Length: 176
Image 1 (cartoon, one colour):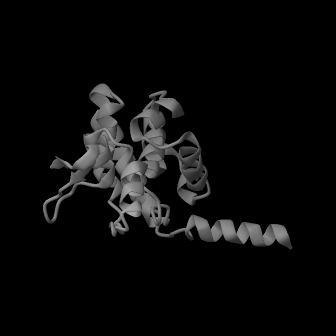
Image 2 (image 1 turned 90 degrees about the vertical axis):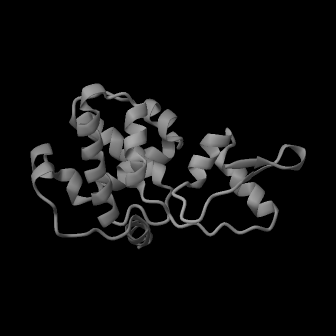
């Protein structure tokens, strides 16, 4: 629920245990997510938010991308990709929409849909650079080397190191 305050400010009231997230709030109030965060920061309010599960956003974003009769198939593949990304530590410290965008782009292409990065970006509300970074991080995982059939049939037991850790190792090697 949104209540209007003084000078056009808005307070977002969420019931206890709500599954609404700041991204939902920004979409529902037509307020930029960064504005919500900056307002809370300027008021001295700290936001203690648990990182929402990216899997919660996949069905909504897939619906907006209009996959038609294959919407369920693309969503399930994207969910599987997000679960794999989570096992490879790609979700830690990141907003969920970037992972969702990368997973939906890969899933769409696996199901022969030619969605562009710009189409994905306009739906998931991340910048193109963020989406490209998530795709590059995914490319560095063993899962990206599997064929479509292998990906659908098997789960890799191994986990990758977090992307920030591997990036640090690459920087260290470059310095030497």
